[in-house]
Image (tube, rainbow, N blue to C red):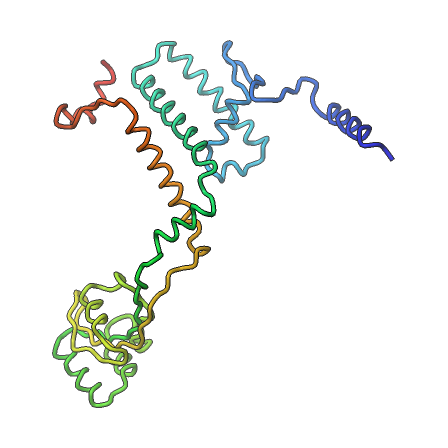
Length: 281
């Protein structure tokens, strides 16, 4: 059996035989030259990293050809335009450089930001001590007029079955299932409906309630307190909150210590923002 060093040497030799004699590697490897201007593997890597995920899943050889074609085409077009950078291009490059440098630095700041302690602190800040949200399970019968709604209340007070009346009389989409709406929380129903339900006791039937949809007769089937979610259920949200908090605090710290002078919109003609012709001057 080959020793480890012999095996590695043999493997390296076999790999060298499999590679083309002129194969280059590394970000500085020149992949193409257009009128004396080099396109390197680094240029191609940057292009690929910015592609949408579905394109990055393509085979390497297909991406290699497509990206290189694009860079060559861009090179010949850029060279045909001359060596003087138009003002709008120069300004766009300055903005892009600023954005990329800022993002690169924030990546380093955030590298170790999402710790378990930070996530737990964010979770506690969001949910600890917060009153449980109340949820309701209700059914309703929707009709067009107050008179119809009052007649329904009279029938229900006389012992009529709510679900059967809903199937027979309700014009809403829940009618065929006996008016059942299932569980819902604050903000999920129109305000008039929600206000009526909040003031009801379980098992009670409401007086007619008018909303934009018509007249409702409501039965509150049940109510419950919705507990805060477990940390693992909202972990991704808490991790994102940690990142946002770190970014906000760090930017505020840098801004507070920077020497900044700035104009307000009142001091300058803000309508110039729309004037692309200014970039041609």
